[in-house]
Amino acid sequence: MSKEWNADVYHQVSAPQVSWGKKVLARISLRGDETVLDAGCGTGRLTRDLLEALPRGRAVALDVSQNMIDAARAYLAPDFGDRVEFIACDLLHMPFDAQFDGIFSTASFHWVRDHEALFRGLYCALRPGGWLCAQCGGAGNLDHFLTRVQALMMTPAFSPFFRDFESPWEFSNTTAAAGRLKHAGFEGIETSLEEAPTQFSTPEELQQFVRNVILHRHLERLPTAELRESFLGTLTFQAAEDDPPLLLDYWRLNLQARKPVTT
Image (cartoon, rainbow, N blue to C red; front, side):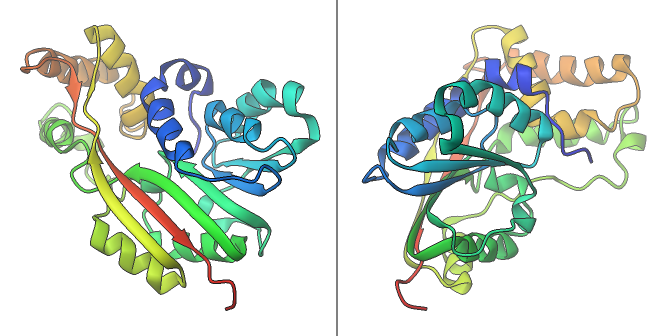
């Protein structure tokens, strides 16, 4: 599967992710001079808020997608100059060793299947005493919607294209997430789940969001525009018939932890 995203469209439609991320940022107490990693920065909409809270500090904006990094650079560099660095990198292969006072992340960790390795890498990237404050999709995330997706994938029209398809996500529960963080070496661990239902105004709005934010890895498997539009159209019609209509059943997993001062 490609690691790329349509950054231009994501920047326009990612209001739900930005809304959730602002709440996560509000939980972080900053002096203003720290060096912080935004792990999965997207187009930099939340990195901007982070940098504004670091008037004497700096941020590293990291994303697996070069398109996202290019968009974040264009969005942030003119205002923040050398206080922000941009790196296109897989979260499982970060080149950092005790470089950050904190790590912030939203709507990214669930795209990494191996959370054991992910948390080890985050631990290594932090300085002693450094903090992790993150949110991602958790247990129950999009269960209703993805049940429909799975059923549609198994129909004769689409099943040939999904025979060896593996889910791109890890939606962890609180207990598993806490255990993995502890195993990586973290302390002061807090995990929680919160419901975040997201409703759209029109079928077109929901379809654009689903196309570019949720199912782009699925759609890569369909070889023609006609098949892709049929797949999306069926799911959009089903969502429009729901009560309430056009609602995505999001659940968010909150993660907070700290690297011990002495290790």
